[in-house]
Length: 178
Image (cartoon, rainbow, N blue to C red; front, side):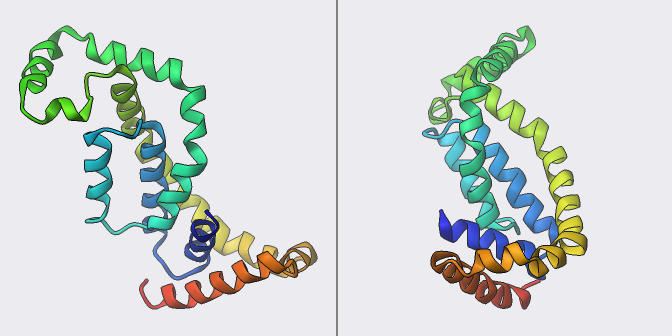
């Protein structure tokens, strides 16, 4: 978890494209809403390795946002039931369920379907919001945070000093990848 935080902070402070950081966050949100332990989650996770995004931000967002899935469980379940109960989708869902590997995706589970639908619906707004945040952070917040007394005192803590060194090392290494 500490490495994910350090790498996510490095991405915020580096030359990495803000779209890559935002895509990592948006996919992390999708993975946080989608219950793990099924082939659908695994296939989507593997898909992200073929895309240009910040994996540390993806992991950090998924870890930090996963607890909210429990709070949203009732709404995700209701959304999944609503989608699975649509009459015009009954025939495609039946055909998909009878396909050899499709049941392993657990698409017919209301929580999986609701989490997938909510994650896909929130992907673009989360991407746009995070892209704007990264721009704002880099332009206005990062210089203020780095120059504050509280931040400097915070970095003097032994464990945080190690994280700061790792972050600056990662930031320097990521700067050439931009």
